[in-house]
Image (tube, rainbow, N blue to C red; front, side, top):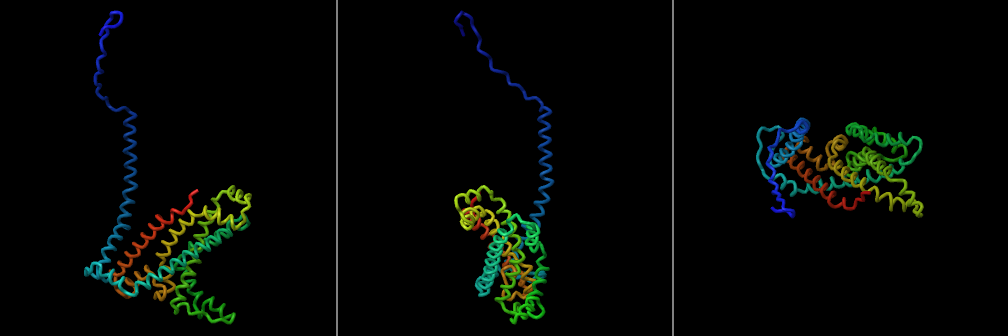
Length: 321
């Protein structure tokens, strides 16, 4: 190429390809660190995953398989019946009664536990002397053994030698037959379950109340909001995440409540919920392990369905601040 002053310049030649050299010390160190982190992850995760698969998912799938069998617990052989157990349950009149008892128990325990828990939390949300002791007292029944609680309250409700019967006779009243009347048996178990789990809802609600900024409440007071208006327009909407969490966990816990029912009403008179019916079918003299597995599968599907409904429908109304 000819330049303006008669000088010629050659076009630059393309650079020659340079062969990659060996990785430097920094690159090798990063690679070794990545391998160490991967090895630590495998060493920590694989045993936990194996335990979850062995003790959670394997029993779940085996239970679904057992629900298709006509099988007696401990018997070496079983007869495949397909969906026969499901057809037998849903076509029987007992299914409606079991679902009704389960629904009444769940709705009553969840509503009373959450409602009374909120009232107790509002009372505990005050800076007064002894508030910590009061909180511990309210929460303590929740950490007690369900068997111990059931035995203690079974004695209290006993119409002959129980403390409640003695109090009623002292004021001229007759003690109800809590254990012989089906409707009263359910009421008795609901009351004891609410007493035991009230502290859980109260502590969770108390944490939600204490997380609300005082500036928001002061601004509402300055705007002229009274106590009732402040609660329903400010506090209650801000407690919606806490309420949603409590509703999900409380429903799951109530549907799986077993220990109190087993101790206080061993025969399940009036308290035969879905999970307790599954227990009675396998261990209560019916010798229907396959039928029991079917009931457990139905309960599992019900738990999953209710959880999904709450996550999809109710969470839309939750106000996350």
